[in-house]
Image 1 (cartoon, rainbow, N blue to C red):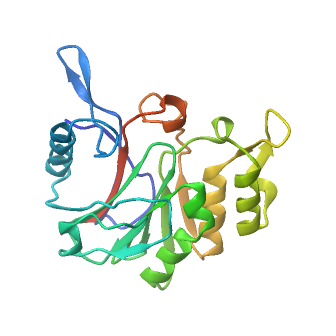
Image 2: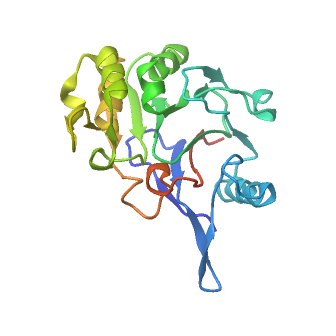
Length: 243
């Protein structure tokens, strides 16, 4: 049985969201890998089995997977788009029983909905995507009226995410706000708080309710972390509307 972290946010009961962990469970005293990414070196058959296990456990036949490229393209997911893996870093839908999937292993997964649970969205937020406006593109496409609700899933914490001048300059140009940084270990280095950056960008887009447990993928062994492990698998953050 897959294991996951349920999103902790106050949304209509028909909306569900979760982030999987790196382990499926214990078999003969060992943990089974629950990598859900096809591009990280695991056998295709093993990943396909994990994906089928995820669909079975959450009770969905349709999942919208994306070919994530750290960009800002946003997809309107539907029954046709689910038959492929489009290049995009965000998706949204009004359809029930269709799961929107974001893969991550340090980047920020974000899920969104409205007060009635009519529309749902999901975004992949690395620093490139965040600074190039992936959240803005998603929120503009969803056209929600009234209160917005967002949950920020597990991502690398500020104490583990040291960046250089290129990232500092890009974030500062996009936000004009240095509060998302703290001084790094050497000149020209800063620690970037992706949780704070994401929340700031959401709030600027008018999202009034933003929740996160600030679960750090680098320090928490339940999660995959690219910065910690290098070649590694990916978790899946999934949001869907019940029938």
